[in-house]
Length: 167
Image 1 (cartoon, rainbow, N blue to C red):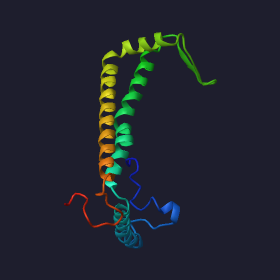
Image 2 (image 1 turned 30 degrees about the vertical axis):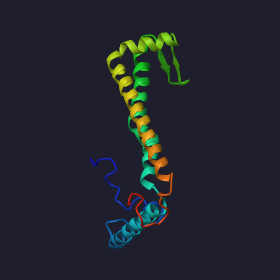
Image 3 (image 1 turned 135 degrees about the vertical axis):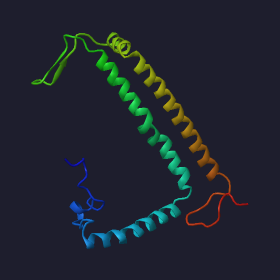
Image 4 (image 1 turned 60 degrees about the vertical axis):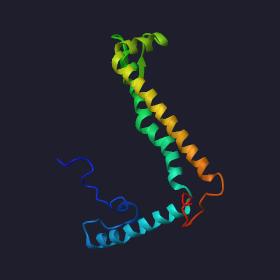
């Protein structure tokens, strides 16, 4: 049995949309060889056109990438473990109505779920708080770097060859 996505080649993303040939054919290889320098040329132009691109990407990383990588998974795991631990013996899910029958609710239910998964949930809470601290420090650092980069007369403009750190 083939592993998932083993049938996807590097150009098959464009194959269904733009009728590109697959990478297994000679035409597909030629197109791929031509696309790579075009892609890197476009990336170079974008990097030259956007002043302080590194600081801007660090701001995006601090706001989004770190949270999606560390904070949100921990938060989802905390919620899942508490809900799973809070389930009682008489509760059930009705397939026809798609409703879950609970015997209680509120903070009492949450505390019961937390007590049943105390060690793992406590670790994930600690992990979540650490991830949020790192996110806050990253945002502070990125914003400070952008403020210092654009304050004063040393800010670079698009396509400039002079380093803002030289002299």
